[in-house]
Length: 328
Image (tube, rainbow, N blue to C red; front, side, top):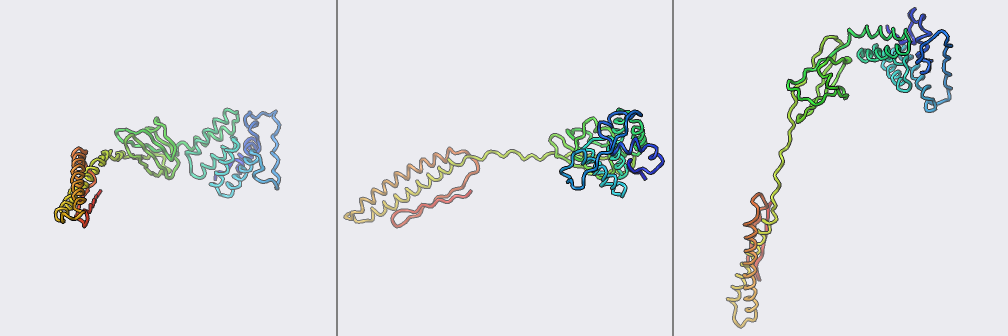
């Protein structure tokens, strides 16, 4: 079983414990950056934090070291996922080569070979630059062992290739990599596809641990449904005023007719005869004017859908009742 660098039990651990395991947990960044020499004194372990000091009072380096030790304990107890989380957080607080090596070993253990391969490759280059030969050999050995096992995915894109963007698990994929094998950890993944004038599509797929090519088919994207621009609604104000003018004109005619009939039927000695005749005349004149204006407005109004209006005038005892109804 693979164990973290700080807890190897093979004879190899006894041979390199001073140059790997101790450096993983105790060496500051300045010591890790320089190649180890026989003239360099041993790096003392950092003082342990007091029991009464809370997490908020610890320095960044102390918190990184605490998380690293927690990751070691979780790894030894079989909580590999928890160990990976602690190593990852420790690396964010204090980037150290030893922490990266332990994180890569942890990811390899939980079945994330691609992530581990990237981390071991980075660690090998880091160790070579620092002149740390044994760490470089350790990382390079794992890189070589992982390479034949890496799962790879090949995207089968639409023939027209009218694609403007790809994102894998929320991260953009550069266009030069669209037509190359993508190395992905086993598990569920989601590929987002966008293209001009097309609806965005999401392709969900599962990667197995097989090192053979796994094809992911990307279907042609559907066209975007763009609602046609609705024609502007016709201005119905003029048409409405025309209908109202005709209605008022009709009411004037009815009123004039009613009062004219009352004036004719009344006794000439009735003092109200003159008033009724005057009202009849005025109603006829006003009705004619309103009807003329309303007819002109209605005739010159734009054609199109508009409110349907209906004007009715009914005789009343002392005049006429005008009713205007409209539907929209």
